[in-house]
Length: 581
Image 1 (cartoon, rainbow, N blue to C red):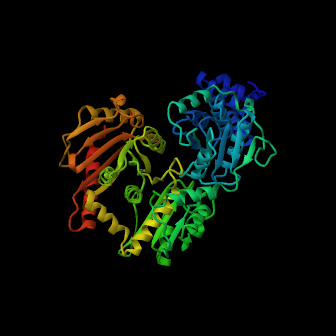
Image 2 (spheres, rainbow, N blue to C red):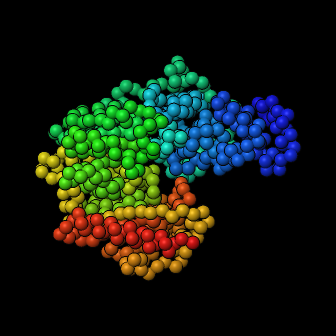
Image 3 (cartoon, rainbow, N blue to C red):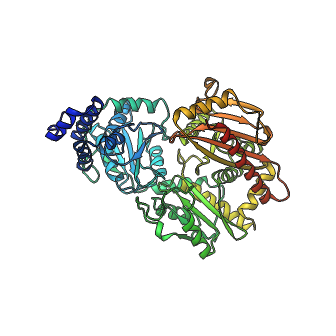
């Protein structure tokens, strides 16, 4: 066992009595500990191995973190199934090997405010520098969209941001952008994963230590004017320049977007911003929220309470790495959080109405987002595309279509509060989206209208739309059988709504563009009434059911919307009950 003196006598006695599987696990654990550069996680593994705590070791060694959706993400701790310095070092080795033959040898590195993020980022920069790459790094916790922006501005070969976004406090992650400044997609992610698996132990990976603040010619600070350049490009994207007295309450949910967004808003005419003081400073322990995701019930409670006290017009929130946007509006003296689909369609319409280019405008959304955007795009003379779930597909689809001369990307969104306005950042960006939404609300206010009034007007054009989802727990095998059963024997009627056709997205991928490839997804078309989508979750042992229903606008929009939402939930429940195996 290289680099390790061997187990103590009582561990050797344990090994002598253990099964082969337990012996292999403990020996593997001690080997890992012997090559771990972090004393804390090294000690954690050694302690568990010496105690013979097989259950705890198994959780730290299986399943190993896999480089997938633009990187890796998981709970911080020791072992290959956790986020730690050894995993980050070996992951960066795989990335460096993948980039080795590229002519461009510049990589951008940034990190969020979680307790381990700076160290992980410095290890990343140290491995890259030891491999001969030039590194531009952010010296302080920074919004993820700025890292993606820097990757584009400086024409980097890649960018890495250490962040777990809106995951629980115990997590961290490693996100990668490719040479096109968008999140990487297959087959590049698989190539990097193979190289990570072939990497030597963390102690054997060449690495320069303490590179942040060092005198290395290969490691440099991001230029001071980066944010000014970002603000200038975002400003040019605005459909209208708005100056007003809109009263805004804002929370970054203890994330890194606070100071940046305040500066962006004030520079662009929105100066009456009141922040939630308890949630403004970056704090990766997230002391006031159980789950720092603005989608979660209760996440916006402090902001809405402050909005009531200050008689605000609008509440906005970013998630901890500032790439998502949530908003709440006041309608008839009641504060209501907008759904990701409503906010997405409102922003899309605003961007399309303000578009003055000569090429066909394009709006792109994930397939599980509301079909309302497709109807809206047709009316506005725009092209609409659907993609697989994830912003990496939205942006790469837009880049591919632009390169083919088929239009100009104007807006992209996914229902989980992710929005990309314009072409400034090739990823979701909760800061620029916040500015555009504040502009829209200020314009509506000047016209004597509310966001609800404007949404109702859109329903008058494309119909009232509602979206809901539910999840069913189960094992992976059970979930797969559920999908197979639905595809082979779909229902003819779901809660008195006729199923007109079925699309199995596991099949015929070659006939679709790469951004809508094979996936475990079944679509039940309800004709003019809407649709149902069913797919296994990519991150949890759950089956997800998405229901989108529509009907023509009636005389009482708010009541109609509520009743249609009740129907959508009933449809999801009925189908869910039939899928439980």
